[in-house]
Image (tube, rainbow, N blue to C red; front, side):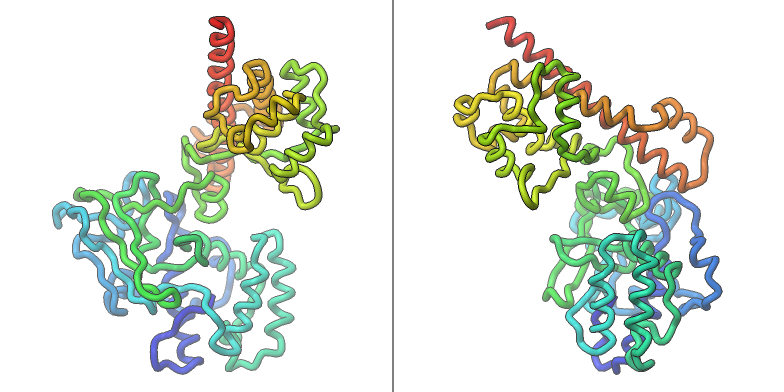
Length: 426
């Protein structure tokens, strides 16, 4: 990643300083969840480290013009693991106190090209869009682009770049990067040592211009002695947390299971739900028009839908189920898409259609559960056996998906019972 260089530095000096700084950050940027403090890719590589002995991160931030609250320490917290915490001897930190402040030149982020080396980095960064599956192809592209670059313009100072080092760098950078206000991810030294919480005790404040923002962490609530400093990385499903940060959150209310909107699958699910003649595979013309508005039909349709999260059922999927099962254009025409997409709207097309739509979702959840090759009790038994970290993460990830599906089944089952009760009292 290209980053803003210190004022007055030459391009070569700036690049070397950036590489040294990056190595320092990545060396110090250990896991944000409790895991082994080692890197197999780095251990396997014979290449020397750019910064053999990275300096103390707190002192480095202060030396580079940043601010660190005197009560902060980087410690191995018993609950959160390695991260920033309030020291026991310094007392509580009141709300509003600035905890960490970084001048605009310290955050590392992709910037507009300022030279030949930056231009090469931008071209390479544009191609990193599908994670590790393209690392081998990416390695070939890197070697092709860098093969004729003069040493003085080489973005990695002439060092060999292979798929192993690229994979390590991608993982190290993505697990430390923050996405603020939907912008390009940036690396924030020391701030990236704060652990995640959906109920954080601190927040990030971004000030200054877009190209070189000043970043700070401010206490949102009182931070007790020995308490970890936590930030909200975002309201994301576990897929994002696992792939970008390397951990899984249990009972994540934002977690989802992704499905494909497939007519054959939905026909099977609705038949299992008791719908006599489903026509998801061959919707009528008026239904096709509504599905097109939902971007579920026609050229360029986005067929990925989800179950779980705050919506419980993806709004587009719910609207499609209601419309196809209703098979009544006059009844459907009396409602806008927003109403049809909301589970909060109580049976807009009638209790019979609503119950059939919800039972279809129950069938989809059941189909999804059947595709796992292990049962919940088996996953729990594996986790109790203290497996290796990679196994633990994989098993915890799929276990949370199964528990999510069960929660959705229970939620929708209650709704179906309420529909039956409402119908019986009419």
